[in-house]
Length: 334
Image 1 (cartoon, helix red, strand yellow):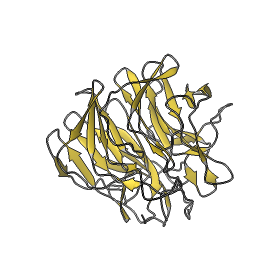
Image 2 (image 1 turned 90 degrees about the vertical axis):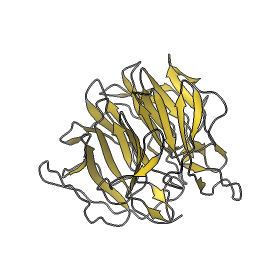
Image 3 (image 1 turned 180 degrees about the vertical axis):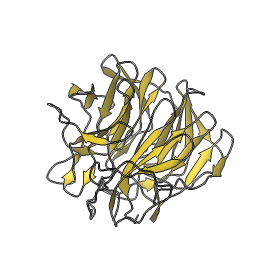
């Protein structure tokens, strides 16, 4: 059983300890959710041996450019869906205690908005007495507290697993879905306190849980894979893994013609001046520990990033190209 946005997994809590350290290779993990922290230094991934958030997956993570720290929110833990806010300063994690905070949720989108100098959180699966319900609210983080700036659910509507990305001088939201009812392949920009459509048809097939990254050199958003409509199943069913890649430049979509990693969902992505790299994710029936790079012409399989196989990890990238990855799940299944 997998994909916790639609089913609760058996989770085992574990915490690291000790002083800051690096570890170049994967370590043995308990079965279920993960709680390890990995940092990318523009050359390699290194594991930080630190105490931090409890193991969790489908967690929101963003880089706060003004305060030069990563912000983590929510996710699914062994105790249920979280409403915790954690901050990473490059060496240690600390839990924040804001006066206000969004309702506990997983599978939300979150990223830095250069225009308003705030971290923006959108949607997700909000905890309730059942499996949770999709939301369409927008919250901002100013370094000390959360503010609800749009209660929703106006446009873009109710969505779990949307992908948010800072994109030059603005923030973009891509995709997401409402159960196995509606899947979206559109893009929205957060402007003057409201969401505005930022792309044009033809668009990718609707999807959620895609690997998404912004290339500052090309001013292009890259998207790979995700989960799309399962037309043969009902509203509560798992979706269908996708295997296509797309780029968005100046509001226009273009499909990447070359074959890539294959069907892949709940993966992560980073970008550099020369490539868009997709890593980890669910490659049915097994979580992946692989990395694939798109150089603008073709896909190539790169060296393994070093962490154990997983899907649903949280990843965010800073403007200087460095990145942080936390947690995920190594649960198998399709």
